[in-house]
Length: 187
Image (cartoon, rainbow, N blue to C red; front, side):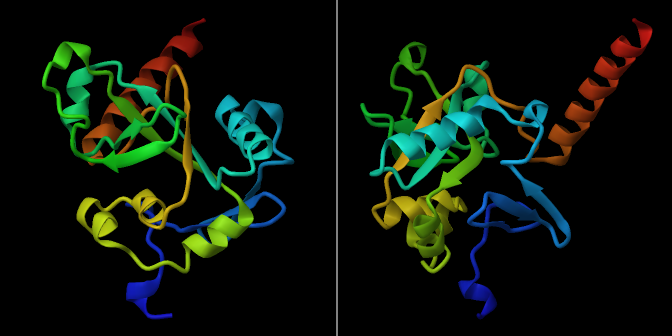
């Protein structure tokens, strides 16, 4: 397969491939089986994702989003935003602040968390599709699904994990973890 036709998954270094038994290959040799993972490694988002796929056969892809703690962060192109319809389906994902803040005090921006649950057939079809103009413009792989008419259901969570999209984000998270580790050692 030519390099231009291979699926790209955002800025991730390694592509993720789903296995029909729930295994995910991360990089070349590491493998994670979500079904066998200890409970402490399973998050409510994954179980909510699995439950949503099981309960509604019309949903092909499930992802998660949460409200921004600081609405000013919605202006960052490194934070992906999503807007939903009344049924919780994604209408659009963007690096821009969407919807446009005509009255900023009334806007509740949602940050996309970047975790997905696919039906097997949807994933197999997804990797066959070529990038469309929206995906190329925004550099967001989830737009490929929307461009091809796939229902992407968005689970809303209260909080999300910290996004690490830039070297500055990595430094900030490293400092936060160091402070937390220092607090746990003192106890």
